[in-house]
Image (tube, rainbow, N blue to C red):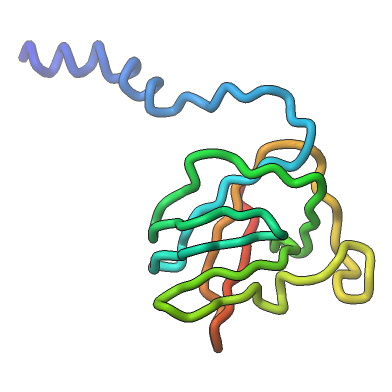
Length: 135
């Protein structure tokens, strides 16, 4: 009975600690955390000429990577990238490429300065990866 009472008393405290948001400074650019949802390790990842490095399967980058600008269309980040998965080079899928407001991305929009998460997923067929905006 005492254990149940203690659990009831401390449950809100435990839950609030697990749900705390990051205390981040105001953004002066686009800050991205990448989430590897490919099911495989990604090595030597470079996104829009920024070296992200190695990203284990199921993991999120520890810090944010800064971009001066970044576009998005249909919830896909408009990036150019290359990384190695299973010893093979993988590139951004065609669905993710383009420059906002051009024929290749007519419905693209520029992201406003802030903090974002982007999921990296495999985009078969071929050696392609896609970048999906997260909430």
